[in-house]
Image 1 (spheres, rainbow, N blue to C red):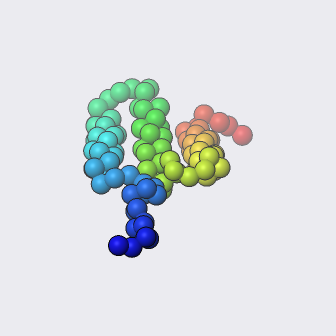
Image 2 (tube, rainbow, N blue to C red):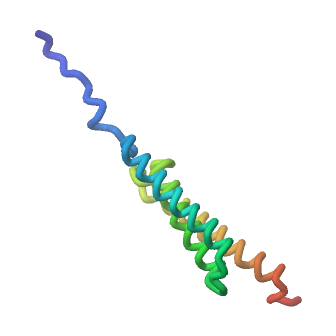
Amino acid sequence: MSNTTEHDTTADHHGPTPSQYVQIFGVLFALTAMEIAASYIDVGPLFLPLLLALMAIKFVLVAGWFMHLKYDTKTYTGFMVTGLVLAMALYAVVLLVFSGAVRS
């Protein structure tokens, strides 16, 4: 009998399990279906905020689970959230400029 212990690969597993990947797929699929449905259904002035909210939720899921930010330090999460906020702000500015709401 050997005195060495085998390395337990499940102890330092950092990431979703296969069943969690399937669950995340289901949630992402449902969110994408909601985005597509919103483009066909007239939701009025809620259209853009709804799409931005769904986009942010999908971003959090993808960045958190598939990029493993859920298991990393908060610094990396801060970088990703900062990028998301800046991207949404840039989108809003460009949208306002091209919609004619802002005049020079």
